[in-house]
Image (tube, rainbow, N blue to C red):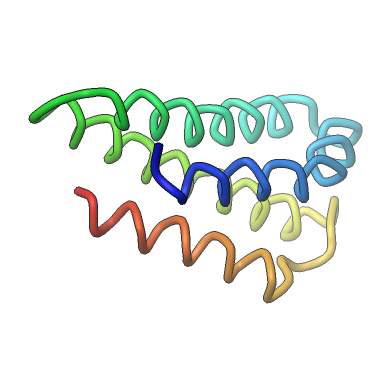
Length: 104
């Protein structure tokens, strides 16, 4: 399993309060963010045990889901559901996205 998988899971744990706050204000956005975050982890896991082009496709999907999760946070902040995305969270996503970019 890739080391980035643990970073993704840790990021989901850190974001748990954000999921809950967003879902109280905007259930649709909250569900979309949960799905994207889940997809990020699940696709990395699946890609780790895939071969050839399937592996690259899974990592590419995980990359899109990582970017979507961050976008959900940014939209929630724009709507006033949360504070602006902090530097630590952005760094986590930069690490995830950067790693996945190298894999695709």
